[in-house]
Amino acid sequence: MALRQLTFSPALESRVQERINALPAVRMTAMQTMASFMWRPLALMGVMVLFSGAIIAGVNSFRVDEFFGSPDMRQALNLGAADPAEQLTFSSIQTWLPGYQFLGMGLLFAAITMVLAAILGRLRVLGGTVQGSLGAPIVFPPLPISARLFPMLMLFGLVVLLTQLGVSAWLATEAKSGDPGALLNVQQHADWLQGMRFAGVGLMLSGIALAMFTITIAMRFMARRVAEVTAQAVEQD
Image 1 (cartoon, rainbow, N blue to C red):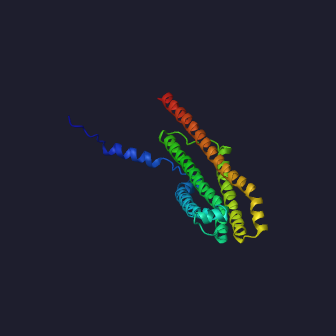
Image 2 (cartoon, rainbow, N blue to C red):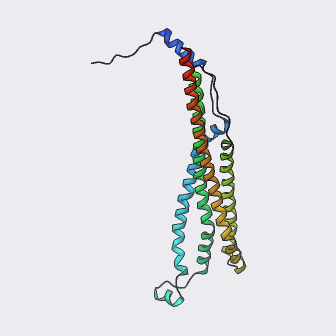
Image 3 (cartoon, helix red, strand yellow):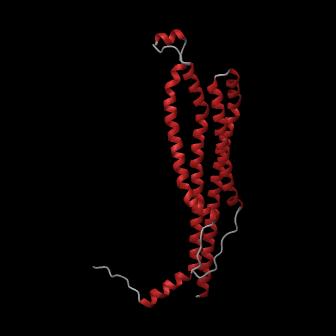
């Protein structure tokens, strides 16, 4: 049996189009609009940083044999004499590379936060469009504190990770010099610098959790609002 194609009269199509055109334009906020464009470059940069860090770590691993064994053992294994310059290069890369990789993770977490902000923007547009199509006033939930906090946590965490990378780069130059006092300085800063890296990641993950919580608030409000508008329309009929 052939399916019949539904057709509408020109008058009905015109009324439907007029109703659509009469709907108020609901747009994302400025931050949500920016997030919908920014997540792609942030994700790309994060992936590039992590992959380049993995390549650098692989190349640097070939210098480990410079620290292997006593001179007699090195001679027995035909490793030759240890090269102090290679040892210093290895130590220097080991100093800044973890901070570089943590920054890559931070960029990916920032991209995830931007995606969640863009989802909030889509929910705003769809919720407003649905309310307008039902002939009801467009109402949005009051801005929760979590919506204000999660962008700041993302930015603060990213600043922390950028700062620790800068400190790691400075310590790497100290390690490269080979001065005993500079090497002691590097070791003294290693513990708190590691804590700083995890603090930055923790801030960004907290921002992601708050963004997801904000999405649940928006979805619950929109579900209640649609049910309320539908019930009012049924009562009027």
